[in-house]
Length: 118
Picture 1 (cartoon, helix red, strand yellow):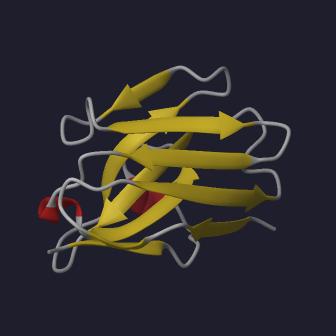
Picture 2 (cartoon, helix red, strand yellow; picture 1 turned 90 degrees about the vertical axis):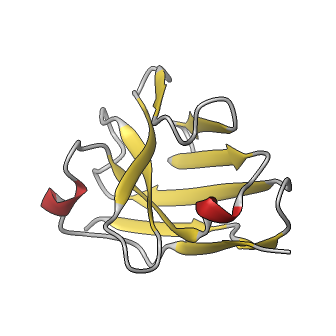
């Protein structure tokens, strides 16, 4: 059974930083690329960044130069270090297996809310 538990969100001022963590259990982590997604109010869930099992990373344009995705395979953890946060980054952040179409994924965690506001 797949279980994903995200944490680390909160309220931060523009320009601030946060580090999100995701604990994965079950078979989802092994051999799979993992990703962070986000869903802003009133918008569809979107990909933020993804990372292969070997830690090759790819970022969407909105995250390039500001966010860093990483993983610890032994601990089955995925992280997202976010710097220079902007109000447009406000969203619920989720981790999951990487797919270009996240709507095809069935199991999701509860997510962690990031609010960027002064």
